[in-house]
Length: 385
Image 1 (cartoon, rainbow, N blue to C red):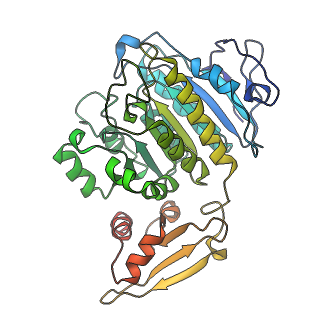
Image 2 (cartoon, rainbow, N blue to C red):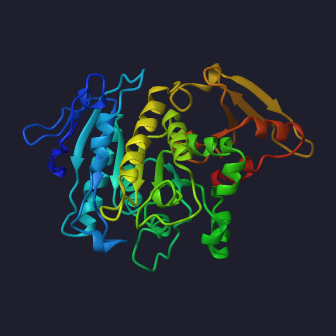
Image 3 (tube, rainbow, N blue to C red):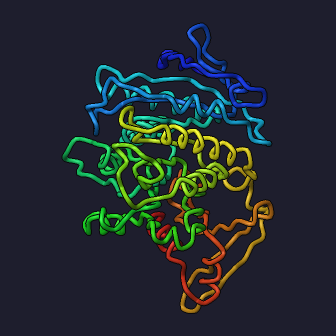
């Protein structure tokens, strides 16, 4: 593995080592030593970069979440190593910070280490994505956000407008984007129309509250999860920057991140818009618990697709009236989760292959059995065509 220690600063914090706690297990970057990162595991990274959204916080930091995370106890099945690489300090230019984040992300992913990037504004999602660009890998992004964050490519990238820059950046390796938690008052008609034209997916906050299982296939289909802390209601994340009366409850966010951790496909996680001032300790505690539940999910991965082979799954073929192709479903015998096969042209290169088996749920199979083509099948077919 290439040396990534040059990008990190070993900022020290006080913590107490308790037998069985995370502090007794985690490998920490100190002023004397950078952890020897091996294949597999989780790496914590703090990035206090705020210039593209909340510049008043630039030069300030707050990593109190570490103290509360270290004090938690290890999960029962946590066998993977956990590294705290500490802090990527902002560069002279924001492009320098993006470069450092992308280099570190790329190197960790190549070595099957999942980076958890905590800190600055949500445009850091673009820097995480650029780490996959170096691997020339088509990716899916899932955002947990009350907005769609499309923005304008003619304007400077910012915390509420990074996706359009990602889409217009060349080469583009984004295959799909999905959003969980968007709220209609924060989404313009133009944004929603563009999302529809791009065949992107949304699970609105109201839909999630009605049936939280609707979010699971989106999380299972993602390579990158980008969590905007401003999607959490103010009663559960008190602070001057978190003032929305509507949003996710704290336990819902932990549930979402555990689902994400269980996904065998997901390889990076950003916890963003974490501000260094005006917060109560509830924000620090919640971030610590979000990280805990994500790691607990990773510890419970089943080795399903794309890690495992669909050959061992139960296969269901559904023929629809007036429809040329049959729709193929697969059900994992390990987890009881469902996938749907979408054909793609043989002329497409192999980078699309990992996207033609789409996570779905049992309701999609039931819909096909009622002679209805699932919406997810159509969207994926259009993107592959």
